[in-house]
Length: 405
View (tube, rainbow, N blue to C red):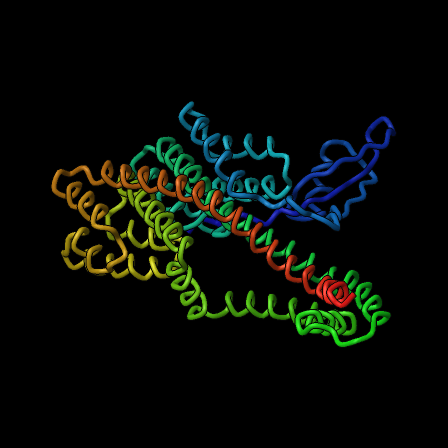
């Protein structure tokens, strides 16, 4: 069994060279003693070593899917040029700006140098390299086409991340407008409505029902705004906690999302596009269909589709065709089933799946564009109606008094 590489730690050191000049620097090593021994062999004495302090704030410093994709493409290019894997990873790591990427690539290089295969080394970091990624790398190692498979992985990740970005962009705008609307309403209730209330007291008389309701709500917000804020934060934290801990909740929400008008079709199209592109990439890399389907399920992005794909995998493993298995889930459109069936009969399944992926990725593009043009006026009108009701409520007593006089 290959020896697991030692964990490296970042150290800073200072000492005196042979000419008595003070020198300092930083390096990675298994221990401070290792740093001292190395520097002494280089003629540096009076060495002081300590762990490099971590910054208080590391916003944006962690490795992102984009960083992994770029590193993957670089590794593919260097391996195709005949450069050894460990040397390639070392060169890519030294060129990284983020410390997290440097540490990650250094650890992988150490494991590869110790005799571990690249796919096994990557599998120890599932946060950055999922099962699909490592499966494709393993297929490349076995077939001797690692550079080609890494290029496919990079292209796949670029397409998937672009798809994720489009879906997220469709959700960000309405959420942002909703948050702004809540803030504006809260500010009006706490700071603006009290000014009108003071004016109404001077007028005397009974206020209209709508106005009185808004005034009562304003009084409550002034006295209990911290309760409202606390409840809002508590609900958000509780929902996030339960969502992470409970599979049933995650499944229920994913199922609900697929049924929401307007947004549901968008998420369905995105899930089908990811299914088709992922399966096309893995099948084209020579991964057996049954094994590929398990990785595809993990990359589906929706638990309803995850369960359906696992059912498809189980049926395919017993000899049922992919087309028939997909039809039984009732989650894949007839067109997708027909394309898959044609691919199975003609031996061009990879090509047919790729065409399905391209078609549905374009559908997602069109859906996002249509959704953006639809949501913007709807949100503006909704916000205008809410604020308009509050404004009208404040002016109703004034209109009432004008009618009397």
